[in-house]
Image (cartoon, rainbow, N blue to C red):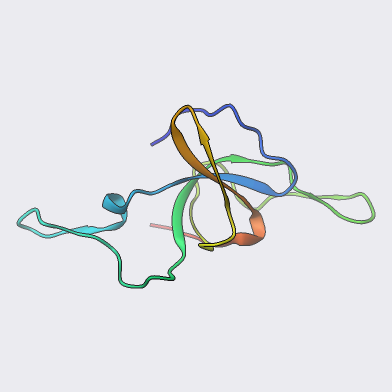
Length: 104
């Protein structure tokens, strides 16, 4: 899906490449594309392309990330910051803004 990007997230942040509407939608047997737009306020979907080292606790211990590169995730619509790198858009968000990992 994506190539390596030149961004390294800090702390408990992840960088997510969004999944296109075409990839989220459904295609009928006749080849008609039906976009997945059932709800306006639904969470977004994406693939994790970079992961920070984790969050530092008040006593100086590092809490490791539970996400890894390649995870397909659902995340809050208004939590991430949008960035553009080499003409491609990515979201940077805290691990706490990830709602779930999608398993297939």
